[in-house]
Length: 291
Image 1 (cartoon, rainbow, N blue to C red):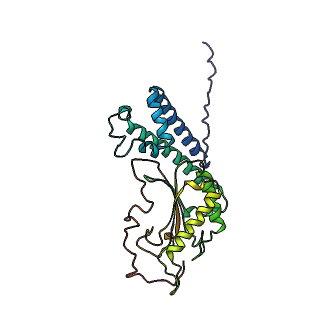
Image 2 (cartoon, rainbow, N blue to C red; image 1 turned 180 degrees about the vertical axis):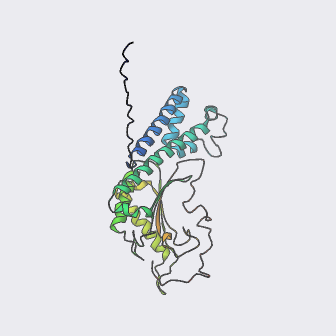
Image 3 (spheres, rainbow, N blue to C red; image 1 turned 90 degrees about the vertical axis):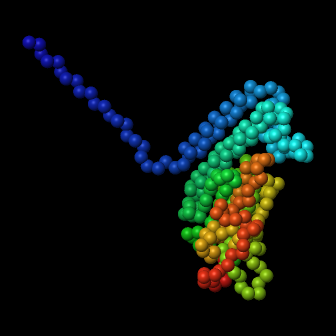
């Protein structure tokens, strides 16, 4: 009878997972990868076109608005029966929008990451909103949860944390070619009787203060298309006109699309700020005058 062979025991070890939170750096790398892949496929598509079509695409991306105007009054390149229609101008416009959206998402993630890495600004995470919407890239600094975090009540002088936040935002937006729209908003708290300075001036002055920091951080001055003061006519918290979250500064980087007018920034549930009825305080006690 043969001796039994020794039994070999094989132990398989499973690699341990990497628990914990490792920050948002991977999101930036992923956004870069997606943008690069989209650019690669666009290049491959364009390389198959003839020289005339390539020149048209180059003209569109260099100056989309001027490109459309170049067709002359009354002509629309989307409906004109020429080479533009033949190569699919709509596809070019969609590709341009997707390209911009990719860059906006990348910039948004960089802004979120840098704000979260700053020791002081990370404490105000609830005061920042960074979103890519149908309008474009929208960044808001909101005086919620921390009172007068960015501006003292009734003041248009940015607090140090506000200046630092605006500077980070400006640095990350400086390499985009799109226009910039800056808006200031207040709550409905009135100033004292007899004062000529009102929420209109305050909201405009705060937006202008943001503009100065943004341009000093690297955004070219000629990219600033508008600086708006909305006072309390585009409330964020409509059910409470005196809520501190209504005090905010908004920065919009709109899509560059010659065929779709840029939608003014505001709150989607509200009518256009230019046509909104005056805010009343019926049924709501008016607090002491402060901002």
